[in-house]
Length: 97
Image (cartoon, rainbow, N blue to C red; front, side, top):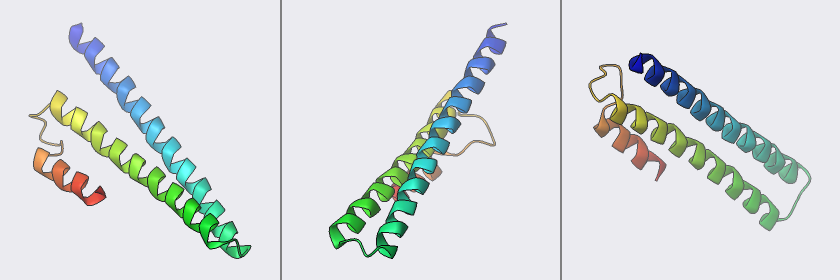
């Protein structure tokens, strides 16, 4: 019975993480659309760069959330042959830095 509860909690946690990642990516999409509009409308350099910075931060946060979710899964079940190995997680993390 405890295994079923743990599996249910893991599934809920995974669904919640996925929802958070998708929300961050949608936010980045909207911000990127704002950058495109700013360029098309000949907005000033400051406006374009500020909007690009917002897109970059939103994408970084989504990436870090993906990695942190994978790390949680790795720590919860380190013997899972289908899981990401710690060395690979480290490389992925560093690719975002």
